[in-house]
Length: 443
Image (cartoon, rainbow, N blue to C red; front, side, top):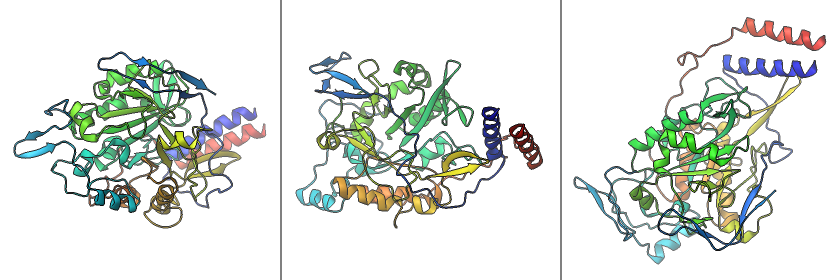
């Protein structure tokens, strides 16, 4: 009977959250650096790299172990390619950095790149300087649980839909998947809490944006909530049309120095990079990259507002292994709340003006600078909730560490639940339901 009451309370909370504009009060929990629900699974390690020669077949000289289309662009094999549209230079080959420029960029604590004005007028991921910079040498903002943007729902992590996110400058999209009746869906912890629909629908929307933005590179991080076989993902990716744009790395795993420039990815038309946290197998599906053999993360779902920049996943890696990987900073502060005895963890929206800010203890800017000092390079990705709060300060943080000027307007406007036609429970109906639930508990 107690189990039934908890289920009812959980359902009631979901309904209540959808019917209200939720505001949380109180201070964040600081007893630990992350919540107790840290995902865990098998981690892939390689004794040597696996290389892909010209063609589609993979060859391996080592072993793998498991523990615990840019429309209108011109391709060239020379590495220096020019494509023009009218009188504008779109993407051009490498612009070498001078020694003094490299030293200046390094000293500033940001991603190193030439400070010589680039020849490109058209930007790559919004900035002309990025066209000749490697993928691993650019810090970008990640929308945590990008697809969970249901207005008024306490389980949401974003306010704006994915098309707006991409328009505003988000270049990594992350989300958790679950399988329901044979269909892969984006759901927050459970599809009973927040169900954002089939994966193929969301990815189709992303493909439409990618197709209409031929000079942008987008990364998608799939959190495999049910530890499904990697082949379960190929159908939705193929049917969405994104398989055409999927990047296949020339070696496994990719080291920090192995990544191509954005310009190269754009010219090749392979502008979407898929990562998966658990159950990826690149020998079976080459375009879904195993996250933790090529990228590490700071503590998951942090509740500590000091955001320690420690390595949490994968565990047990050496300093040498860490230095060869990209890394992702989890900077989404969570709040544990109690509703009629049930404990829930939701985004701490009260502290958002601090969490997503450029300066001050607990801010994204402060933590990113600390990580940069600790590891001698900025994070590749800055994972955040509600990226649009405070007029896009998260993008300013990324720009500061990329040594570029951020002067774009931000951000799109959220849509109310009423305008989306969502059903809302009347307060009286909620009260009656709560009284009924309490009566069952007492019984």
